[in-house]
Image (cartoon, rainbow, N blue to C red; front, side):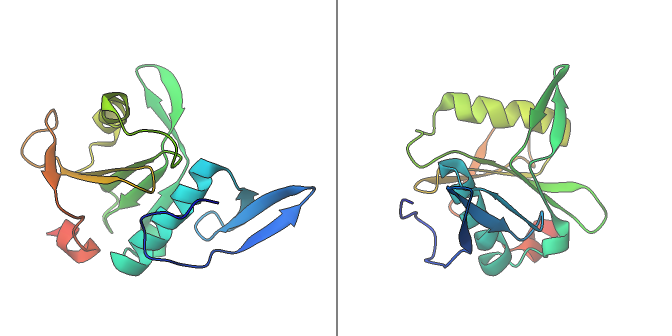
Length: 151
C-alpha cells in the first residue's frame, strides 16, 4: 500500500482467502484492506496516538440517514457526554480532495452536528472548526488534541 502523510506506523495485516485484511482496533475485527481502509486505519491511529482520543469514543463506518438516504460515515469521535466532536471523511490516496468531498461531509454534518471536521486522503489533510457557523468552514492548521476539542 501507498506511503501516507501520517507518522509511520505498522498496522497488522494478514492474508485471508487470497485477499489482504487489516485489523480494525475499534470494530475489533479483520476488514478487507482497500485503499480507503488503509487511509482510515492510519487516521484512527493518528487520532488515538497523536490526538489522544480514547478508543471507546471512536466509531467507524456506521449508518447515517442523510436526506432520506442511508449513508455510511467513516469516523466519528464522541464526547464523554455522547455529542459528536469530530466527523472524519476518508478517501483513498489516489482520490483528489475536491469541493464534492467537502459537500459530502457538510451533508453528513447536517445530521451529525459535529464541531470539528477532518477530510483526508492520507496525503492531504484538511481540518475545520464549525463553531461559528454550521454552514461555513473555518480551516485550522491542525486538529486540536482531544481534551482541547472538549473545551
